[in-house]
Image (cartoon, rainbow, N blue to C red; front, side, top):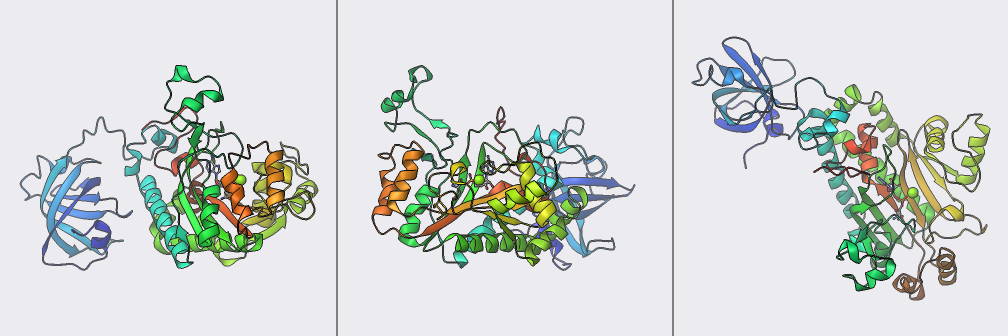
Length: 458
Ligand code: 4AD
Ligand code: MG
């Protein structure tokens, strides 16, 4: 394999002729010399190519190179007198592979808004910011698998098509093979492909629990779908969720795993993506590096939901949404708690039973469940998790209250009939994690192909 630009930038000058392919970032013409910066997407910095006037196509092509042209260059890597780079490529030939008509190219050199770039999602990966986001996403993805492997977890591929609505919030997209005019009411699905109503998964948790009760430590990581009509900067209709599930584990052990994981992932990005982080620090979110370093250095703050409500009531702040025990925390409440009160990630535990799904373990007070959310500055909820109800009678009671058809969830109840043990897990929203480490304010900019109400371009 040929070396990529990232590797070339770290190599020593060499007498051997090398070949480099990439796209032009900038071309500076200084009369009898052109400085062409090219990138192949492997890193933020481009490789400077020096093209002299004696090259055959100097006048006809090289002087007219514009941003986005694909080129192939042969030359020698020499030490560079320029600031900020140790090597440059002295071109012996430079050929255009794919030209660009600068008049019609939507990506001009000037900075363009993230909103505009969203309208050209097929071209935005070529910009510095979106290139950096793609590399950080990939690095985080890899770090997740590395982390769980080191901790002795096995990965389970949970299904994308499912017949169980884990969160019970009715946000499942229906999957059907029936023609539209054959769907009239839920009975129609008895004639459908699966013989009952099926949908795209809202969470792999229930299936992950199956494997936690045979392999103790498992995780699932994949696309998740929610047909919720929330047009916010933190919601997508298709997002990636990481869900570990552990047997012989209570809420305390669940929180410990989540905190260790977030610290590890942040540490990995600080160590491996320094150039990218510097870009976000300069142009997107001042104070980002300090925020990330703080995450690593300090233990996360902790408080119960009941304490959180008291803190909000005593804050003297006016919120748009009322603060009342028994209602869910709104984004404005979450942000006050972790940004102003704790000033670091905050774990809120023991939420009211009435606002949480059926599978969460009831606490002895009869009013709350062993749930935890991790809130982070700038985002709000990054992680939602809980200890699961492992007691058969309590679980079926909760399912009946929630109006679930117990027959359809017989397999889930079996896990409590045979060899039930305390177990716990959580879900981490991958895009919210990418938002957190990059400081990007809109979730649509940290996923390559955002799907939101009314929008799924390419
Ligand atoms: O809190 P949630 O709904 O939890 C579950 O789905 C559990 N079954 C997870 C588990 O215990 N295994 O979702 C988990 C996380 C949230 O904290 C949030 O970060 C993210 O998933 N999330 C979303 N991210 C983007 N767009 C959406 N519409 C999201 N909904 C949830
Ligand atoms: Mg949640």
